[in-house]
Amino acid sequence: MNRRQAYEAAERRRSLIVAVLSTAVVAAGLILLVPLAPGWPAVRASFFDGGIFVDTFPTLLRAFAIDVMIFAWSVPLICATGLAIALARGARSPALFPLRIAGAVYVDVFRGVPVVLTIYLIGFGVPGLGLPRPWNSPYIWGTVALVLTYSAYIAEVLRSGIESVHESQRNAAICLGLSERDTMRYVILPQAIRRVVPANMNMLVALQKDVALLSFIGPVEILRQAGIYKSLLANFTPYVVAAVIFLAVTVPATRYADHLLNRDRNARR
Amino acid sequence: MPGAKLVLRDVRKSFGAQEVLRGIDMQIAAGEMVCLIGASGSGKSTLLRCINQLEPIDDGTVLLDGEDISEPGRDLAAIRQRIGIVFQSYNLFPHMTALENVMLAPRRVLGQTDTAAAERLFQQFGLDAHMSKYPDQLSGGQQQRVAIVRALAMQPEIMLFDEITAALDPELVGEVLEVLRRLRSGGMTMVLATHEMGFARELSDRICFMDGGVIVEEGAPKQIFTAPQVPRTQAFLRSVLR
Image (cartoon, rainbow over all chains, first blue to last red; front, side, top):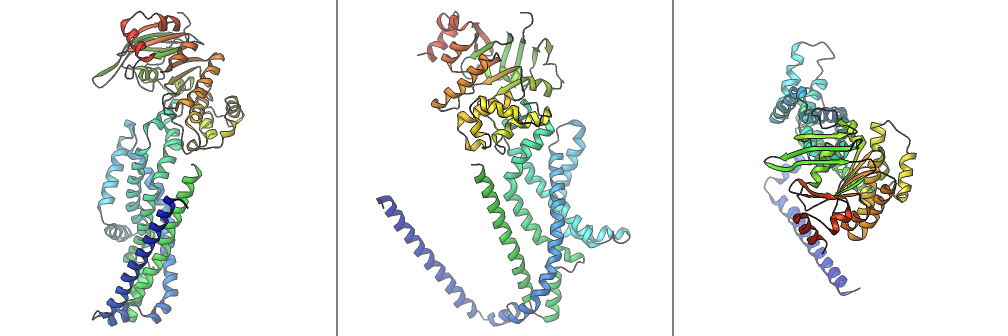
């Protein structure tokens, strides 16, 4: 081991010891101090009831399947709509000017209105027109509300990605005789989309959580089901169960996406 | 010069208030190799970009085989296939392998799905070991050679080279110049903006010295390098040939 390596090894040992000690102090503090709070026994009984946790878990997990389902069919719709809006906003031809304006208005409106409001307005408003079954389903209109909101965000993220691809890439493509359309499709978009995957993963995690908002217009998904249990059992533990289930999905999903991105980057290095 | 491949007449181009090309007249015969020399900012790059209409010109005409390609509103995709261009910064597509880079335009524009012709070009320029590599895995010299192959795959009639060795490490310049030498002996019509004076002198048919958006002096390499007539040419060559 040379002098530099010896120094760095010592530094690493020192940081490790400090990190372990400080973590231990904080953890001990929490474990010792929180139960000293006057309300702790009551909080433990109403939020962390082991028996209720075990009893409600299976039903809540089944209810979560509805969230996953809504999420699963919303994502492709959101991506397609978001891409269409992003492309519409970048349209250069004068004939497409109305499309450009429409894209800008769309983004302004649906980014500006809280998701819950959009869900209420569309989820209650559209079926209120007296549509026959199955066209009055809260699943359909709830999904539409999510798609409208999230595609507005995704469109903006994509547009920033498209603008981040250097002009020289476009020049190189059109100088080879490629059409504007092929240039966008084969040269600009693939690079733009790769660049915005991390940002879009953020959006998808947020979407996975916001699916629970559809409970306000009807579907008995996990948040609704947890609410039912809360009323039934006069206990908040089902909400904690729901939180744990959400985390069990979103945390691994983001880590996996990071892993895929790294692998993709390394393959081209 | 009847039958000139490329004719430029009083070509003018401004960016905002700055006049970059102030009336360029040029004739290039088929198979001729012309080198543009001059200081940075003299308009060499802009002139090349105006030849393939990457920059629309403000005034004047560019004729390719006698046909006005600078007419505003013209469909340029077909023209650009016939005039290949290679840039200083390679501009390969980073998300595609070298072969995909080369095949994209032939596949999409010419409907050519067979990679045999592209593979032959890779072999010809000693790049066959790198076909399935991504640009980031190649050296600057290799990337620039792939960029040349990419332009050649469209079977252009004219090739434009915009200071293609300027961004390379000195030891990599040779392999790229070697490619140009091969093209030269194959009879390709070429216009180069370059700082490689030795190369320009050795291989080109004609040197054009540009300054302030005009061609100040042109002539055979021997004449320009040994007996330049215009004081500005003399001053420029003195400063680069020290």
